[in-house]
Length: 65
Picture 1: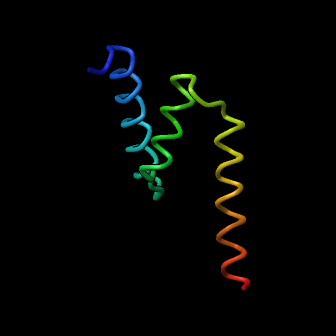
Picture 2 (picture 1 turned 45 degrees about the vertical axis):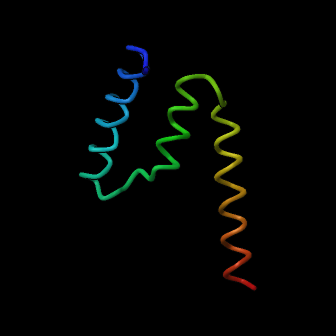
């Protein structure tokens, strides 16, 4: 069962996602997962940025190859 703090973080993330959507951006399930990891302290922002960079590099190399 989710803690009160976790539920609060999810609500904040939902509000943030809705604001982003109104600006034309979507928060993917992976992005949501990374945000929750950062907020809960299971991953650092640097770790998540590194994951995004690796994924970006993989996608670029597929397009080039």
